[in-house]
Image (cartoon, rainbow, N blue to C red; front, side, top):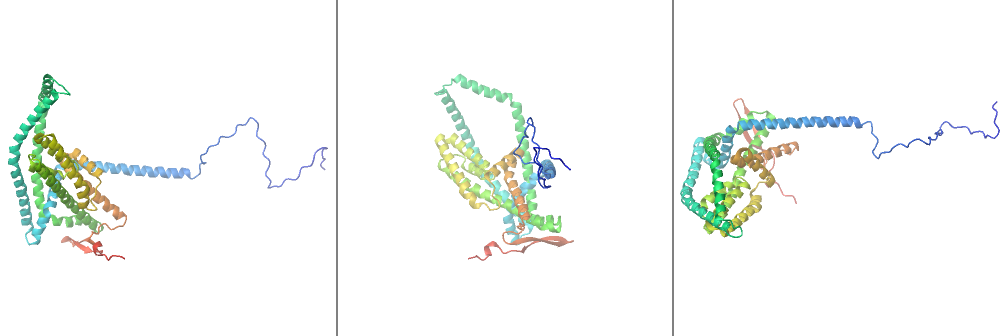
Length: 430
């Protein structure tokens, strides 16, 4: 029996589900610090590990790709002496293939057709050089005299206001330049020897390129079947399609730049002829060949034209020639180029400048000339792989045909089979 103390009320019975009262914290306890960040979960650690593993794998793959690219560039640099004639021969072959194909279609043997076209090309090129050489030789002396007179005018101008330089000061400046040239005579001689050696190597590469061009024209149709035969059955059609696309890209580049160069040379040459600037034909030819180095070549050719106009005709005529060059190049770049460029060949102007700059820094003038075609070929391969990954059947040409590789132990043949309806023949939808 429990005794109840006086003055105390008996407590009500406690339910099992009722929470027990917590004791009040002591007065000297510090309140916990609170952060706005969410509390960590148990899945954060494994996810972080998987992300780090993926990052490490991707980084290793990227390093391997960069190493492979570096090794490939190193090998290509060592083989550049062999590759340069091959590339030049291919580019020349793209120009000479249409007349060669025409002769072969009318029944001429492949060797005869290739020889006739190549010799005709050399005869035309040699005739152009022989035609402009006397004009250049006759007018160079006159231009040198005019340049000397122009330097004398400059000397008289710097002696007058606002510079007011004395004759002794001008003479000292000229003497310092002469002393500097004499002090670097050995280096200048070394540069001259290097230049002569470069010209000799260029002639050797040109001869090799012409010889290879003959064989490309004669046996070029066997290249795609041979290359397709070196791969597997599934990859053969892609190799054939890429071969045709790269050849078409090179041919399109040469045709486009030749048309652009002809338009620039024609109109700039007319402007030079109207204002009686000497060396009209050589400058027009320089403008034509400068078009094969996009943007940079046109700038250099235009600068030569303005400089010769300045030396021969004075500042006013040079300013007019500069305006003519700028107008022609703007019309060519903004009107003609978008019309003649194919949809699959467009390269941004920044890509063109970077390609020309990179090629020029790696291989000089030849590299600047080859920079844009190489960039275009890389773009073709990239677009082909991208379309293949997207299941867009890039091996099907615009006419709806696809390369078909057949053969046995006796040989390999590549034919075109119709797999889709050409876009131009599709019925129009209402």
